Length: 79
Image 1 (spheres, rainbow, N blue to C red):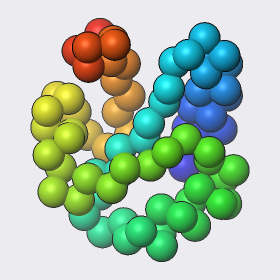
Image 2: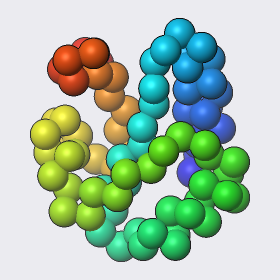
Image 3: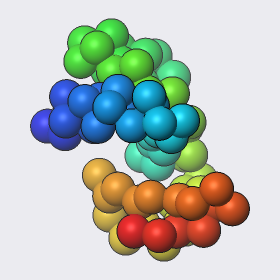
């Protein structure tokens, strides 16, 4: 929630260069309705993928909620 405006700003800036941001929501307790409400409340236009089983988070090496990673065009983590 605290980072939503900043992430949206970064996404807006880099989308002009063809870079697409995607948010991965790995909290098992967040329903689709919760995610939609979050997007509306914070004007968060980045696509949100529900990852309730934390499969994507594990593949990306995320250790905590609200972790940001950058992937290259081959889906390798570069940050």
